[in-house]
Image 1 (spheres, rainbow over the protein chains, first blue to last red):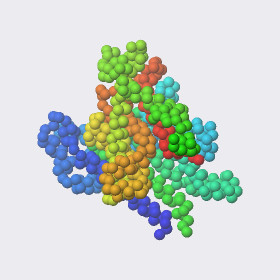
Image 2 (image 1 turned 45 degrees about the vertical axis):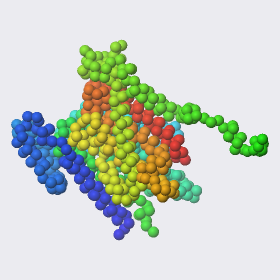
Image 3 (image 1 turned 45 degrees about the horizontal axis):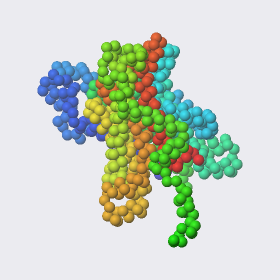
Image 4 (image 1 turned 180 degrees about the vertical axis):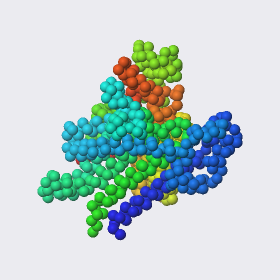
Length: 326
Length: 306
């Protein structure tokens, strides 16, 4: 088999294994830990019978391995279980399926993440590569200092500064990103300017620093020195010798930071009351709505793992050493 | 008279000239040579430490003392006004230093105790223990820690104790990785072998032979991990699932006063109020980052891109 193919396959298998292990961890963390959900969900006034029936519905009387298989089986068919909220001690069940709650919000979150990525990735790569090429110049120092400061800021600090200046002092953009499903694309974009800008500022800093470091370590490697000494023009050195080797580190940087976006999105969604998965998860944590928490955690973890997997695969298939085996 | 005093020895002369400096003097010299960023960082840390230690002496009001006027504007009695139920914001900010930094510090120490101890053991024993721990850490690190923390908090409920334990456990995975990686190189050294042959126990080898040799990277990492833990706890408190009221804490203070921002056009000082605790969080991270950076450069001789 071609070495590239076998390496990619190996990495994919490892990714699937990680996903499986993570699903086990999420299941265990929520299902096998102590804490009587029955009483907590149904309230203090719930009767013994109601709590018992609720426990039976959750299958808490069956072995954990079986419950895991049921859970993962239902998951494969898109059934994420039923939310705890909406149940009451009187036995009336107004709860909704988790999938119904999550689906529209997932679309919103993906929209926000892709708008951010579309701005942040080209910007960060441009800043990172230029500051690596002109390193130790004034431009580079300014960019470095600026990003170091932004990295140290918590997301909500950046968000509130933006709200203060762009949302209230000069009311250019709405400070609440109440996105509705029937909105047109333009209005949606306008409403999500501030959350997207916050996320962009936060991840551009990380991405730019990592790109800069990757490019600098690449430019210091012996084959670039060799190409320079052989009299190649600077443009050819960059395009022919540096760039083919740079794809892997750049892809890693991008994917790593998009994975970071997964976490940043939670805080930013809460600040701007943006109806996404992150806000849903925080609400569910406060009300201890375990099935919703489980589903959101799984979505975030899967996105994180897949992005890292993608980075590794891109790194493998663009690696010149694997592409041209001896 | 012996003839040793007449013979010349360069080492003896150098020894006479060399000033024996006390530890304190050496520290002072070190500080004088430090770059500006490190000085700024250190002074920020000292300032916060003073606030945290002497909070009851400095703060004009009590931590949870409720005064008659909620949402009071900035004034001489209440420098930063009062919050939604009439607590003095400046006092809560000062007490917040104690609570927020205290909890983050405790969490980081716990994470280093767990992660560092297990990492050392894994590096020394290298058998099934190493395999199990390393693979376990791989899986936990595959889940973003804020998400994992949110999930565990929903199961255990939000209290300061569970917050400290959960974040410490999640963060110890990163400490484990670093400790294992640096100590694996030390474990194979001859002097470790000599200690083993001498019959020293595992505890001695960990503490007296390996630890002194891996300390500098771990200390620098401590600073960075502290920042990370601090930001995570602040984010969780801001989301309302971290440190719970009435404990004063910067993350939840931002959350409680956030709606004041919309009055920026009428009263700018009120709109800045929620930004102050957020800025306090940002400042300490900047300070610790600067100091850790300096320490890393000093201890490893690491130079940026040369």
